[in-house]
Image (cartoon, rainbow, N blue to C red; front, side, top):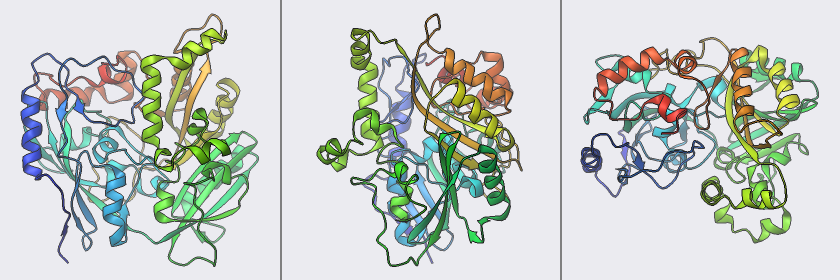
Length: 467
């Protein structure tokens, strides 16, 4: 069967040419950024003085090959559009990050994760090749082996400091029409950890196969593991719909079994931005009825947050009411499985933020044809199970404390647990610690080869200095 071309309004070569011309037009010494309408970053950045790179023509799916189970995708294509192109073929990416407007290029250069990561690793591990606009202004086709293998290995978690992906060829997996869910309650965290280890080892739980696994901790005494199985056959029940009045994460506390269409399962967290829509009142029944369904999306909520960052309305109201200032604590961290219970107890005792998301992951085994088998800028250990712990909110700044103190304490705890922290949000490491944790030596060697004039902002400057 031949690859199916997907209609796209802009020719790919033309779009790449437009991108390269916009890159050449950025004056030397000025920061280089993408001109894109949406972002899932939570790192504040300095104001930009020059136009961003024109990526308007790089938002589509170029081809889907059902026989080879691959797709050629432009770098700024969102997972929402990618899934729309693959599901009609009974296929989906090996890992589909939780939010609709995360782009494929963004998930590879900035990391991504979801409930299939305990089997399929991270999104970059299903990439077979990438075309990358480098800091030298050219296009390099990077693969696990060959001339640009060093760039292929270093690109994940480089956050655009080594270049921007214009095209990616990724592997796809077969998928069924529905996902049946088991919501398993745990009152002791060590038992939750043991269950994760058993599912990872066996690929099943109590005799039923498990294709997807994540969970939520409401408190150390109330946590849930959600085990999903793809299927074409379900009992005579109507699949749940959490884009209406229902709120997905609350269903874990009242249902032991659930069914969703595969499409709704993939975006189950997007409607309420996990649980963060509560900050806007969207989970209140009356507000929810009035809030247009088309605005129950993570990108709309993120837009509100960006406006708040700019105008500080809520912060001004808090000051007027005499409330203490608040520190933003928005992080995803990877903790080794055997340290997860200890870290969760410490977090509940010290940071006191709930709920938190739990998502087990392992580097892909066996490594697929697109895997470089080593990812030096985010050096997880092969053969080890980690749990991604996601927490997104704010805490009051205690008297005598400074903004950032809680995040720094979390960074210390993550390092002591042998874990890693994603860099999409605030980071406070000094340069020596950052280089040790995020492959600084490898990054510099690849940077010098592909961006010899260092036109692209450095990784530390992006992640910590907010450049």
